[in-house]
Length: 187
Image 1 (spheres, helix red, strand yellow):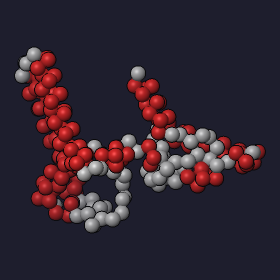
Image 2 (image 1 turned 30 degrees about the horizontal axis):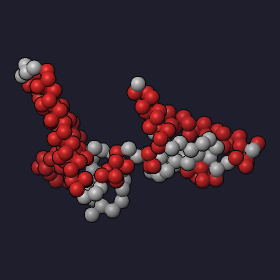
Image 3 (image 1 turned 60 degrees about the horizontal axis):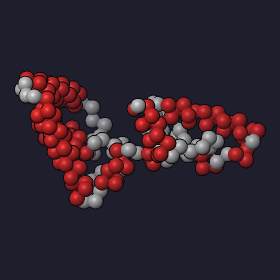
Image 4 (image 1 turned 45 degrees about the vertical axis):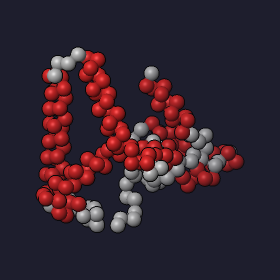
């Protein structure tokens, strides 16, 4: 059993079922693809299988959408059908986590605020710029005003590791802050 977490688990739960189905076919193509002790396996069969499954999956989804459009049913009935399908997908994918009492852990992985704003070798977003600003201010504070430095923040950010982000000079960003910013940009 693999005991180390090489990547952050932040995919939707239904994606795990999809990957499991894909792994059944992958074993047929090349059994080494699904060997967990062989994570860096990059044979041509892997690349061909991944590209093919992406293309086939997209074609299946496009065909399903086209077939829904061709039904010609009235909009309210079609809306209810789609709403019920979405509810069913949520129930099937989230049901096991709810039954086992793992929903809070799942939500913390899907919305990883405590994991830190920067992870996996610099997040390619605005938080990377905020972190850079904190590093610049840290250098200035070390010379002009060392008493404002949060020592925990000196070692925290920009390491490229999964973990909490603590700033050295600027105020720390809390989950509520990122939630408010996200909602504001949605408006």
